[in-house]
Image 1 (tube, rainbow, N blue to C red):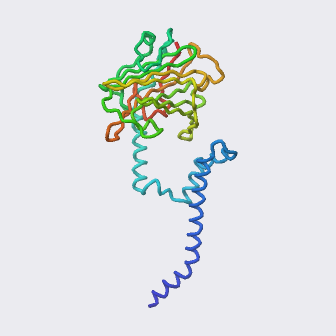
Image 2 (cartoon, helix red, strand yellow; image 1 turned 90 degrees about the vertical axis):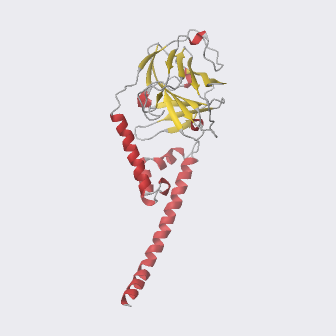
Image 3 (spheres, rainbow, N blue to C red; image 1 turned 120 degrees about the vertical axis):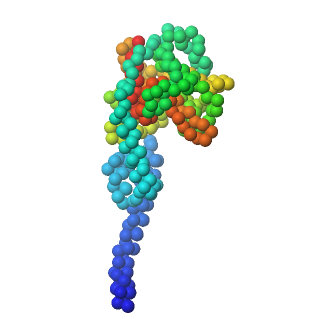
Length: 303
């Protein structure tokens, strides 16, 4: 009987604290949702600069202390994600392949952008045949042809892939379906590059990307008027051919023309989806992680 009375007294004493805790926790959750929404809606608004602080690392920690990140899953799920991250870091500890340094040929003839890339103007291009699966160094038997070249106005690119079962992305995120990704970084000092993604059905996705040493990456709207792309389907797969003006790339925005000896850091990636939504990524040279890993881009010296 005394024990029951003690429990009742404890409940009476702690009740105001629990009510207060629930109230403040609820307020913390509501504030967190508002901050996230402020950040999402901040583009072009007067508060954009301040709203970026919502995702700064120290504010991520502050928010996580007050509001449990339940969307990250259970503790065991979080643990497995961190184990996966550690294992992915370990992959690169055994990686001996350095980014290749290659000469990017100058185009003496302007190619017709029709999705074929088989005319004489491509005969002197930098060509890669075959593919490497992401994070692996052994060449696969997947049939692929990748081509690159430039002139004093444009960077030209093309890719032809064998694919009997083309799976289209369901929305604007073209990298969620069969596609070609092109990442171009003319100047690594600024950690700024462009991400271009092209689908076999002619759709394209373009973003201006910035990374700091302490953040993943930030995307900005990017609609290069000079970008011309053509795709073509055939019985064995598809091909994509295109060009983009240098004046719309980082480090060339003032209209300064490319010069012999300058270096572009660049990577091409093929996303291959199957009917079960399984995804495999391929590159023309051995490459780690994803297209946003600019540390592993090829060095292309303008010839």
